[in-house]
Image 1 (cartoon, rainbow, N blue to C red):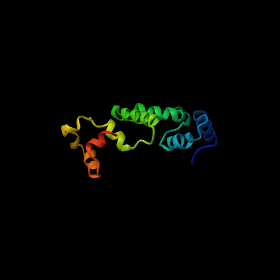
Image 2 (image 1 turned 180 degrees about the vertical axis):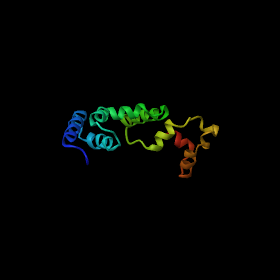
Image 3 (image 1 turned 135 degrees about the vertical axis):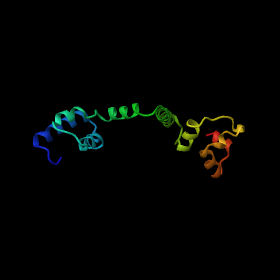
Image 4 (image 1 turned 90 degrees about the vertical axis):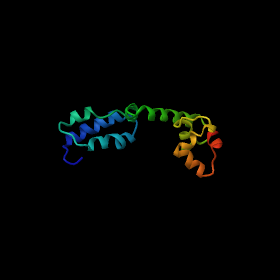
Length: 130
C-alpha cells in the first residue's frame, strides 16, 4: 500500500495470512477492501478490526440482514439443495414471498409478478403449481 513503511506492510501481511487461513480469496474480497478504507494510524489498531475469514464475513452479513430477506435466503438455499433440478427466481418468488391463497379469490392477480407471468402466457393455476 502506498505510504506504508516496510514494517507496516509486514504487519499487515501477517495479519491477513492469519485471518485468511487457507482461503486465498479472503485477501482480495475482504482484507484489501477493508484496508483501502480510510483509517488512522497505528495500523495495529486497524488490523485488530480486520474481519475473520469469509465465513465470519458472510455470517456478519447474514446476521445484519432484515428478517424477511434472511428468511428468503434460508428458503432459497434449502430449495437449491433439495430440488431435483434448477430452481428459478420466479419459482422462489411465487412460492416464498407472496401470501398465496386460493387462485379463485382473485387476490393473486393483484400482485405485479402475477400480471407479468400471466402476460407471458402463464395462468394462475400453472403459476401455483410451481
